[in-house]
Structures are given as structure tokens and as C-alpha cells.
Length: 272
Ligand code: GLU
Image 1 (cartoon, rainbow, N blue to C red):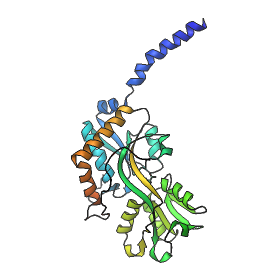
Image 2: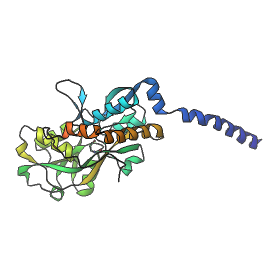
Image 3: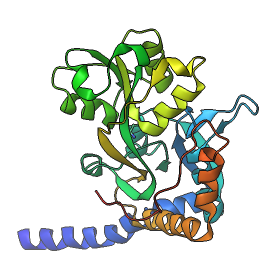
Image 4: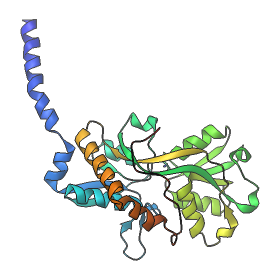
């Protein structure tokens, strides 16, 4: 009797396996004709609202558009924050995260990551007259950052006793610094460079040289979707080989931008 039930359960399980395998997100995306990507809308120059077009533009948005084009589908952008992007992905509200997201071993427990498509590192932004020139100067002081970011965790580890004041987005973290409510703002250098250069009085601020961490950006893919992950990686490899990725870099980080930055990396597997 028991053996028969077990055999029956196995039989049910075997018929269920092809059904599970068919729950392929890449097939779904192609069938519905739309790729839904979570992007930032207040983190220039990766994802922000263009004052001219009123639409979301940026380095991350250009990667989202290229991936949708290569998959032959329309692109729909969904604004996400640092704290909401992973839950939005795991709950199936978005297909991909392309939102200044660092690929970390800790985050790999929740989601998969594509190849690294941007490289930066964490720094501080401070008032020039504050005397703060390194993380060691922040002991017992207040530092602004964003909820759910690697920046928040890394600064706590680097400066025991630091008081992290977390906001939902970077414009508010910068405002706290500008209003001297905190001694420093901390996140990825490229984000800090952008807020620094766009400040009405950039000479008031500076970025100390010290790096707190390296931050390789990856595209977030739900776990158990190897076809989509492979497709994204193949497209990124093509974008590197064709020069399209370098062109997107030059558009947002070229000499005439707020954040001139030499491209010192190539797209490829993460080296964590
Ligand atoms: N790259 C860092 C992170 O993924 C900071 C930028 C962000 O908040 O998205 O947490």
C-alpha cells in the first residue's frame, strides 16, 4: 500500500517536472512582448528623470533598452529604490533589476547576478571645511546614506561607532550633508561625484581619496531562471564586443559630462 502511494507520488512528481520547467521567465517575456525592468529614478546618471523629456534616462536605462531590443520586446520601466528592488524582483513584479546594484556574495543568497557591467568603489563626500578626510575621522559622527545599500553596511564595518542616518534615496542623503545635519555622505564614488558636480557650490565639498570598498554592478535576475540569465549575459558580451557598451559609457561619463570617468573595466564575469 505505502509502496504504491510512493510510486503514485513519484508519477505525479514526474509529470509536474516538465510543467515546472515550462515556467520559464524568458519564454513569458517573449510571449507577453514586454520586458519589465526596475530602475532608479533619482540616481543620476544611472536612472533619473530628464528635465527635458520628463522620462527616466541614464546609463542603466540604456542597458535596459539594449536588452529589450535584443530580446525583440518592448521595454517597461518600473522605478525602484535601493530597499525595494530585491523584493520587487523576488515577488515577480519586475523581470530584471538594473539599478546601481552591487553584486555581493550576501545578495547572491537571494538573487542571481549577470556579468559586471560597471565598476566603482565606495567613498565619502564631505564639507571641505569640516576637517573630515578619512573614515577614521568619522568615529562618533553622523553619516548619511541610503537604506538597504552596501554603503550603509560597509561604513558601519569600517567605522565602529559611526551613526548612520539612512534615507530612501540619494537626493535626501545629499540634502542632509548640504544642510550640515551629517558630517559626511557615503556611497559609490560615481554617485557622489555626480551630486558633488551638480551642487550649486561644488567648491564647498570634496571627495577624500580613500576607498572603503569596491562595488561591481550586476543586473539582478530571479533565481531559477537560467535561460534569462544566459540571454542577458550573451547580450552584455555582444554589447562589449560591438563597442555599444563603451558608447553608452562615453555618453554618460565622457569629458563633457558632470562625471568624466575613464572606462577602466570590460564587461565580464564578476570577480568577487
Ligand atoms: N551600489 C550600492 C548598492 O548596491 C549603492 C548604490 C545603491 O544604493 O544602489 O547598494
